[in-house]
Length: 164
Ligand SMILES: [Zn+2]
Image 1: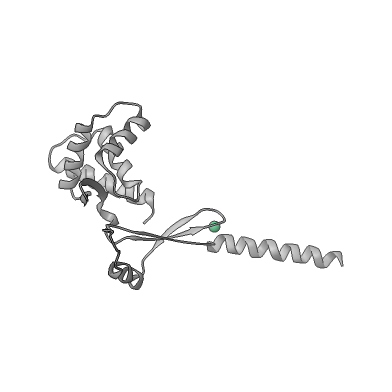
Image 2 (image 1 turned 180 degrees about the vertical axis):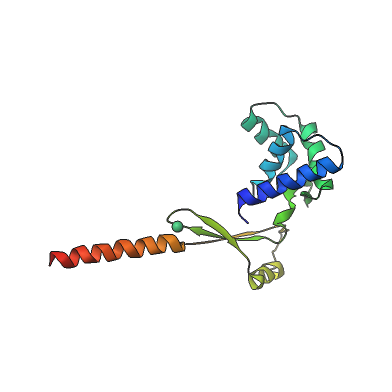
């Protein structure tokens, strides 16, 4: 599932939850949800509040952010992470971690599953560090770019041959 998909799934889940509980679906709520679902790390309410104020140019109070985070938590969309004395929030669909494949040529990003890799990361011991989630990025070339490159190369080879 790519980022756009996971944001739209989260939005759908939020709107279902709000409807079930007779709550209003506000622009603010959706923006906050988008902000959390666009980031791959756990973030604090302060950071979210700052980011939202910057992006939407409207002042969103920390209290509003906290209230909505509580609501997202109840809706199962967000989870609290305790790091030392800080409380952070992260999207719940990140629980198992992500293996991301990035094409270095066109930038296309896809995600994949590999249970063996997942298990190894879960079993990995981190010294003096409490890991909460992970993202593994694998760089390479997508099949479309690889085939484009092959076509380009064979065209160049043909031109080269014709010249002889
Ligand atoms: Zn590509």
